[in-house]
Amino acid sequence: MPDRRTRRVLLVALRLMVSCGLIIYLVWQADPANIWARWQQADFGLIGLALLIQLGCVALSAFKWDVLLRARGMQIPYRWLLAVYFIGQFANNFLPTSVGGDALRVVQLGRRISSYAQASASVFIERLTGFVALSLIANLALLITSTDLFGTRLVNDPTLSIGAAAFALAGVAAGAAALAAPWFLRITGVRLPARIRKPLQSIADALGAYAGDLPTLLKALGLSLLFHLSWISLHIVAGLAIGIAAPPIIYAVMVPLTDMLGLAPIFFNNLGARDFMFTLYLGQIGIPTASALALAFTAFTIRLVISSLGGLVLLFGGVEFAQATAEEPAPEEAVVPQGSGDTVTR
Image 1: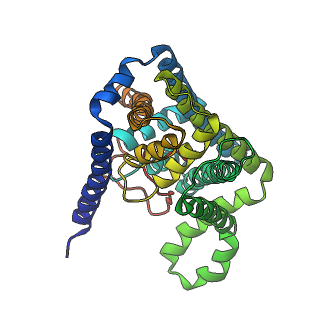
Image 2: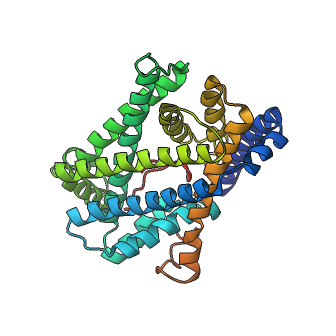
Image 3: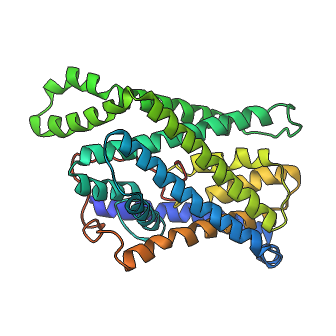
């Protein structure tokens, strides 16, 4: 029977095969020459604007993390949080690490504040509010495009609609479970060994502290909505840069659904999922497959360019990061939400 490392390598190889296979098929159908022709006509001024929007998205995510930490009395310099966020983005997109960007942030913050439980709770709530905001936008956009309310009726696959609804329910359930964790652990924890119960209790207490702080949760949710609207706007700008004039509601559907689909463990870094969704929805309004793929590749490249700034932070030692490597897993009490490295759920 394969050991854990072998299974991990096989899983990564399978995800690469699925992602690359789907992309190769779509590119072959579109003809690479047509995709290249779209890029040759690109407006680099708009591409630059899209890069600035992506930079703002990362800054906004770090600010939301800061809001959650300050609500618990932790005064961490924003510059430090932003640097760690960039490093997390870099790790997700470039490093062959077994520890994702979120786990990396937990380790770094946990060392700084001497509490991995508090660090885990802040990252978990940050992710959770992102999940909820993403599902709200996706389900609202699906509802609008399933009617003639705004004059843009689309064919939404029932599987995608059900998946979006399930995603929303899962987010609500995860939130309820997290906020009820202290109560649940008090009932069931007596049956657990002390070495397991103690770190779980620390995390449960840290999560429970957010339960009674509705203003902070609402502020975090509002920032998440702003993040996702900015992320959608980035795609609109990138689309205009390569000559795609699609209604904004199209982007409001396909971008969140892409992020949801990218959470499936069959894709590598959201590759393939993005390309499939863009061709599916843009094709319904007459946008050629080549243009849809050019947009998907452009958005991915913009994300990579901004993520690469985390490599510069590492190179110039902006954050004490050397210890948090793939060879050192996060501590036992650190619990981090799992997801695709390129999936945007802030």
